[in-house]
Image (cartoon, rainbow, N blue to C red):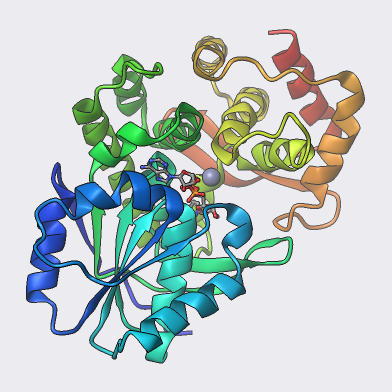
Length: 354
Ligand SMILES: NC(=O)c1ccc[n+]([C@@H]2O[C@H](COP(=O)([O-])OP(=O)(O)OC[C@H]3O[C@@H](n4cnc5c(N)ncnc54)[C@H](O)[C@@H]3O)[C@@H](O)[C@H]2O)c1
Ligand SMILES: [Zn+2]
């Protein structure tokens, strides 16, 4: 497989509209926009603020269930019926669903046209905007179909986040805390200074933190583009996190991906302490911080067995061993680690009694 290294330009801006204006001016082909109903309502007016022309726009119904091949076909048909050619550019205005799906639709239309990502959720700004992964789900298999393909540009404007609900803010913030655990205590302390409370977020300070998180992910991805090793450090919190996410999926207690990762990190910090030497005082301080932001997840002894089973069935695991990334300290992640059922249960007990 030929892997094209990232040549995306990431633009941090307080005025995404001006950036789009420049893209339209310099584009050799026709420009198109993909949004969903929410980003059309909340983000599109700001995006168009300094524009004199309106590029053709297509809106999808919001939601993970629409990250589906049927939506891709609709986007291809929209491009095709509006005269898109190989020089055309697709601007994806939305969260991870629109960016993943739009990136995939653009990468496959006429064997690939340029696309620009304008991520409008915190999760898509700090996570989905870096790494070149595009794709869709296949039935219940997440991101089963897709390709590595890098956008021409990524425009990061935290002003879009002002209309995002707090649950989605919390979801993205968990990935930022993860970046701090794997990259170093300085960033962790910076994040802690940010008041992450509903209605009190300073979007300018947040932009600086988002920049930092993107840099961390970018460095990891550049060091391991084929996902053969180091990139696994980005999975910190995700082994237990995915189990929590699946456990509550479809129930009234459903939790977002990021929230599940936050709870997963708490358990994996315990395992990091137990198995990789993460200091006890840092463990208690970190779990305190996670609890302050995310509250405590309430689950029962009788849930332990199923949670461990869910981890065993995670695609990253061979046979009975469960794979983890641990941290020896802030900024000292170790991947390809394992823990057995008894140790994981000890982690649950520690968390529940914390
Ligand atoms: N490509 C990658 O590397 C990568 C990394 C992480 C996650 N992802 C993918 O990202 C997806 C999740 O992304 P997400 O959390 O952004 O979900 P999402 O795209 O579904 O957005 C969440 C909700 O917020 C709404 N919304 C978006 N921006 C808004 C705004 N500014 N104001 C108000 N509402 C807004 C959306 O319409 C949606 O209802 C998953 O499909 C996941 O697989 C991809
Ligand atoms: Zn994640």
